[in-house]
Image 1 (cartoon, rainbow, N blue to C red):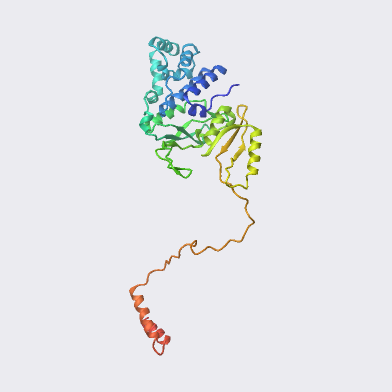
Image 2 (spheres, rainbow, N blue to C red; image 1 turned 45 degrees about the vertical axis):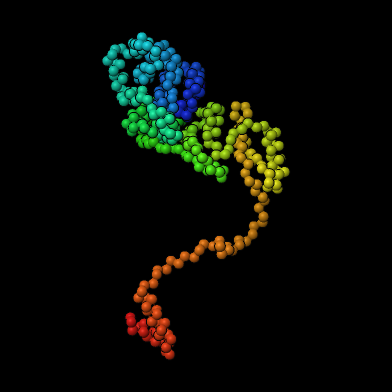
Length: 361
């Protein structure tokens, strides 16, 4: 049985590849209810993000609503896809197929509430963000009452709280997102917009001038800790691996023989610090028939550690400077010490000094 598209695919993949995946999924499993819910999820993404997904799968939408058997799911979401139809004649035909009369049409329109209006609004242009990047971080309850977080990249920072609440409320009506047969998005608890922009100033010891802000990578494809990797295709796994690699590490295709040659070269040059050595990360699992490995930039060569020695005392310059934290003496105390010093110079010496102190007490 073909697997349904995951939330990672629907909310992270680019427009072109996502359209191909939806068409392929519908071809393998022509379930109109499921496919329409995929497309509703795409509408939600377009509404809350600055990315453009307008016109995606329009031909498929017209095919479903003009020829598929009417169901309650199609009837509920039908008003959201008016823009996919080229003329009023086609749209009126759809309305007659799914609704008995105008009164029923208005009832289903009203059930969508403000979410329909927000889905059709234009978002902030990418140019207006001036390189800043944002994400929407939300908390949902699943069907079992368990709380989990979900984040959406490329968010529109100008989205109002009312808009986010209304659109994510629509998302809670979708039944396609499950984990161990438990619906994921049932009740919206919290939602916020975070700035996830990093502005790099120094890279590898050199000052970087006029850099474009780089989006901070959350395990991100925004991969949930509860995400089931078994539900992902090899292509999706590869994208996740690329996003999760630390800075300075790239993914390359290599062969076993090349790895062995590089390993032997590293062993032979271990005692030559002046030569750069390519450090090869552990081999990853084969993806799409090739061996993928993460290759890091040449690090400094570390010589073999000598035998353990006793720790040496710190030099005077290495020690922390002494700081006197005593409370400063008062004027009265200084006067008393001065008088005691004078008394100590007398014949009786310290005895007079002590008797003097006792008298003062």
